Amino acid sequence: MNLKGMANDSMAEQNYPQSISIREITEYNFDAVISMKRPDGEKFVAPNSYSLAQAWVYRNNNDVFPYAIYCGENPVGFLLLEADYEERKLCIWRIMFPEEYVCKGYGTAAIQIVLTGAKKLTEKFDIVALDCDPANVRARHVYEKLGFVETGEVNHGSKEMIFRLN
Image (tube, rainbow, N blue to C red; front, side):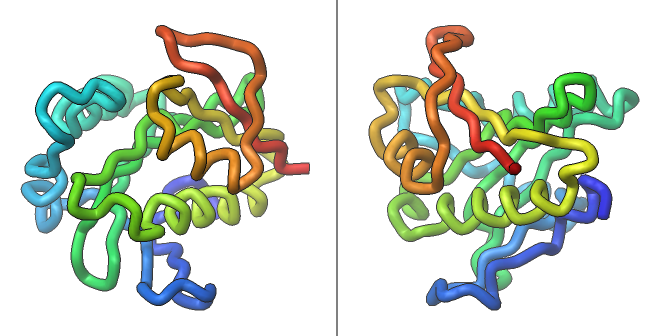
């Protein structure tokens, strides 16, 4: 399984009431992903348009992977992964849900899909990492519940958290 193979993985077989999956961004879901917004003034995550532009800029490196997060056939969120092969680290660069899809378990399920996929790639990765703004209490709760711990590193004001795969 390569990183692109993580798309279409789902939590349907898990004990979630909804079927969560991660899918590649295509011409069919692009508009839905671009239209997803966080509340005005919130600065926890960059707009999806900016994230997709970054993915395009780094496309030739083959280490940045944007995905749509689905509940059933409805796109509900956005995920941007970065593979740092030298450091053996898979980074959750961005994960974003519009306010109407927050606190429904979608973020937890999406991250579990990433962790499950990363565990299948232990020949490439030892950890999954992400940065969390200290003021983003909801996100921090989800990350800690899943087993992420702080490293003590601070990146652009956000605290790095990691999940060890082995």
